[in-house]
Length: 182
Ligand code: HQG
Image (cartoon, rainbow, N blue to C red; front, side, top):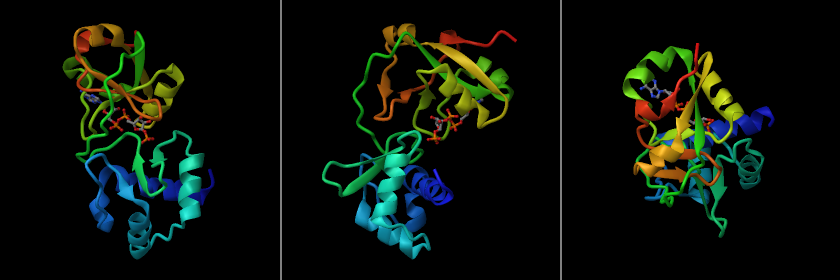
């Protein structure tokens, strides 16, 4: 992605996931925004985004962070929200093992508290070890936790999978986490 696409993607992430009020945008209960309104308000806030640029951001996004509704009128982020919306995802049976990428500096606290969703709505888990490594590196020296998703699910903890393939769940108690050896 080029610089313009990346900066637009970051801006759209910010308003669709965390701070719609920053530009006076209203998300509906499932996190959708009217595209015309988003582009208008973005322009007023000094971010000129054309419909074509927005579509390029959605299509080229490395993680498919956003989705445009079938009628082409609305857009939402697929996951990662801190604003109080309901993605209305159906609970799903996870694969046996999922990974969580974190940083070594958080391990001591995670050993005590398990994984907390923090300011986001869910704990984010990855299907692939490599993806978890990228996620963890954002916070420091990556540490990969292996989550016993099958047992956690069997014990009644709901799991969801976002449209872009990120596994989501609530608090992960320590008993389901395998920590790195060293
Ligand atoms: C850690 C990105 C101390 C947790 C990624 C993580 C992902 C604890 C950090 C998505 C803890 C929160 C989400 C505890 C959890 N004590 N630290 N008890 N429990 N943590 O950014 O999972 O690029 O909110 O391990 O790819 O890193 O934005 O969550 O290190 O899918 O699309 O607290 O965001 O996607 O950090 O990332 P975050 P995350 P995007």
